[in-house]
Length: 211
Image 1 (tube, helix red, strand yellow):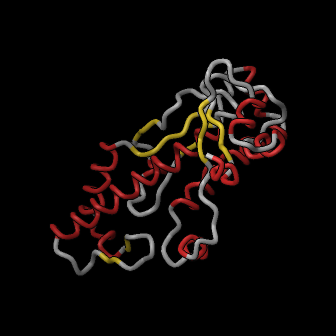
Image 2: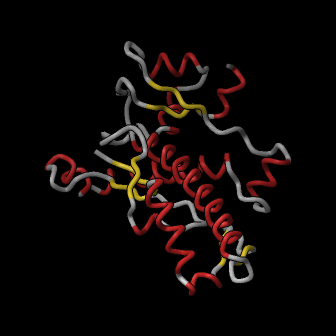
Image 3: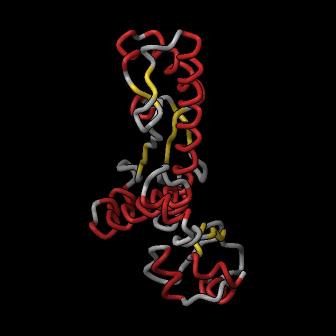
């Protein structure tokens, strides 16, 4: 099954300590927008700033990771339905939300066969893109075009999630939210009407007014 990883709490703590101990990092910038420098801060203040930055980065990583995982669940089976956490080096930036996505296991013949097909690769890529776009629509960086659209009320609310319960069909869910089957399929990258109990579906924003 597919997995999404974010940095573990222990990894975040050790990485903060490493940044403070490494003199070369004192001149690096944190804060995403490049407006906070550590080189003119005493060790205690630098530690507080790094800790705040790492905590915010980890929170955002878990948020975007869960959205990506939920969307991938409509395409392939999941190893776990929650974002896992580990100390992978690629996840240790203190100021940039980072996730690691495992799309499947090549040691599993069925998954290896699907991963070799262009259609499955594209479906997985679209599901990852959808999750990332949902995150940025809900959490647009200040000063960006998306943030301006949200502040001006010109951007639709993010899609609502619906977890499929036993006895539900795609047609029944579409009827409940007063949307077309075609729209529900396209929003969730579905090729047909087969859904699984526990699967998370994204309900397009156009349906929210009816609820």
